[in-house]
Length: 146
Image (cartoon, rainbow, N blue to C red; front, side, top):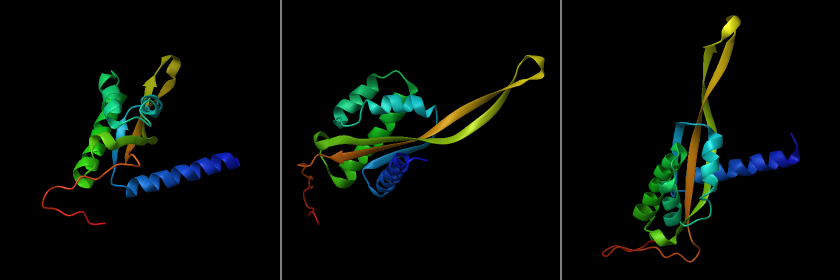
């Protein structure tokens, strides 16, 4: 394995570890669907505000856009309800789609042979982050503790 691939793999491990610790992320595990098709849709929303990303995903007609929209909605809910960020201050930081388990099936073909069918699944992680100048809203009667 080349040094570049090792570095990239290490960086991805770090990103995944941070995503698990951050509260502003949402995950969908073992979602049926090819990871390559999910990545195509996921790349379109990286770096966009959550409002525009949600609009893009709602207009998408694929299964991937529906699942990513559900995951994005969960991440937005965590950011607004738990942390208190405003919806306009959030943007999509990263979208990670990993390979999950594969269901292996056999389809019989002519002359006594068999064709292998791989039913792929993936793990989807969406990380939402506030813009650098974002302000946390504090409800009345509560004090913000740092």
